[in-house]
Image 1 (tube, rainbow, N blue to C red):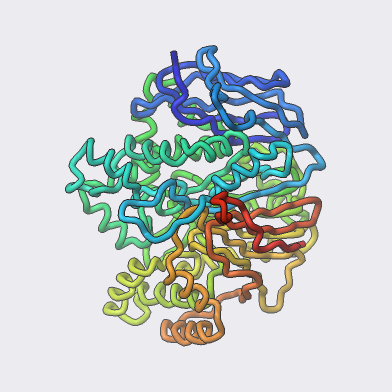
Image 2: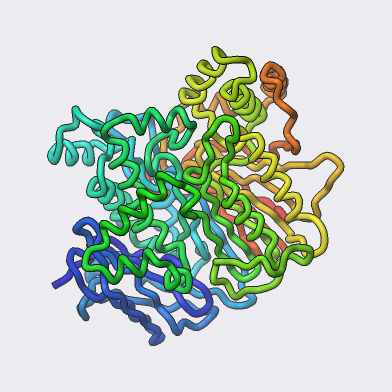
Length: 560
């Protein structure tokens, strides 16, 4: 009898269909049956001796919520008979429904070996407990996980012990993840958490990777990549990271129509073992990042989400360094402008969306913030100039050491890309057909804040904001708290300008100011979008005196 090893995860949903992802312990036919009669089946596929199915569920009714169960070869496996949680549901948006988008990043399932300070309550666990306590109450319509869903380089004591039992940890990457099998252990540790498992079974999710999904500082620079490729373990690590990301995260980001048109997905499903095909794909993606697009688009009624790959799509050559390769940048502009009143109506989209027309809200999901504290921005721009040879070879060598040591690799470390994204946002938010809001959603930096840009001689019609929220569950050392608080200050801004002058850096094409935060803690941010209005709420996971974990609102404001 087949058993459920991981999942179910409710991934894609629209008004009439959904996808549900599962991992099983052997080949089988997975089935999802809904209480309203909607259903779907899929036969499992095999990757590296693991078995998976992504079940498309059709015939759903817009604007409804229906309970569902999962069966493997006709036997019910979800919900478990002893479950303490309410039934999982598939909720579909209606034409006039508002949209609640919750997001965050950086979640340790458990503190890593050695510990890194106090971690505190898990914001996802706490959100799950609140939704479970009131199943008919307000809940997110979609959960955006903006990177570092797993930590391949900062593993828990339990995982370290498990790895040490299967190989020599004195060789290769040591007590970090080395191969596909070890990646699966990370996902089990993270997604078998009972609260998180239930939450992901009943709230649709969209995901994108960041560096720790592969390794800290992934694709920081061409020199960094050359050093990694010179090791005897990196190739297996990066291929396993991309393969596991495709299986556990990327497949569920796509619509049924996109999946049907995906030649790799077809090949993997039709093969008796899809490992070799997926490995070849991952090798191609690593060797030629421009050959693969991890970014994707989702339309939720009149809200457009563009999830942008700001890790694997980079061009790392110092003389033409960009966050996005030319094809990726063109794709992003096409998706932003498609359907705009003044945009390219024939630009097309590979989203499979049928919403049509303009959108009221544009969400750009990028794991790395576009707008940072001014001192951090100026230091990253200065560092990019140093590494590019602005002050000679000696400064370039020092700049590379500083870049790696201080993690200087956000949008501001790619000045031309920083400016290009600002220009695109201004174009999107200006003129006939402009949305009410353009929000850049990010994580990574282990605190939350709101920053609002302005452009010299230009005022977009849309309200534009950088909304940053992290971590979901991670440590926030005192050095980070003090450093980012200072980074937003007036003295830090003056210091940053002096540093930028040393680098002969051109001023950025956009200015910005912090209008909320910084907030520190394990936290979740939620955007409530209704018509052309938008409201932001930030909640932090805290422990009451009796030990109960609750979400406390620390910010609640109108954006539009």
